[in-house]
Length: 271
Image (cartoon, helix red, strand yellow):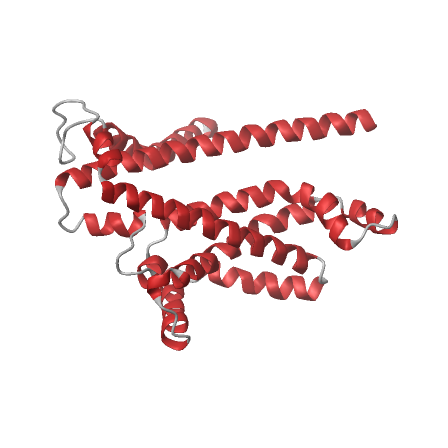
């Protein structure tokens, strides 16, 4: 009975999470302008998405910002995690606790703070995208840190110490011993950073140039009176993003499973 209840509850939760997205995906392949009635199936929303210059510019700018900020945040977050991990118990505890504050803090507070600090205090010009890039890096770096730290705790630290004993410099030992072991965490952090950048609204809206829009800010503005074809094209964009995310998760899980099997086979051979 408990198994049946658990299965039904899990099924309802999954349905609650994915049914709205599936409905949106279905409507993206129709000529309907409002949710509620399907008249004919059509690919016009996807044609509009890839032929409207303003939509293509918005998507291109969003992707450039996401990947650029994710690269910087991944480097900073990874180096920070490695540095804190080898700094001793006190530094690990203090920095680890401080790193959790931006994660649990309300994003609107971070957005206001960055706006005041960068634009009000330091006088950064929003038109050159520096404030926007810094804002996204500040948002993403703590999450990269949190993704890398568990892998550092799971790795075999004796290999790093053995490399130092055999004459390797700390930089060489870090590059050849530590980094390969924490690579899955780095990749996860990078993927999470991209997702956070694509999804962010508050920090983007307070630090972006007036003429620039990301997907999140464009969608919010589009619901306030944009053309109908633009609104429905955004249904298609949302569907594409969802499919890409699902494929990325599946690929990462399959790749992780293969690596675990290879590692397990290697350990069996050593035994």
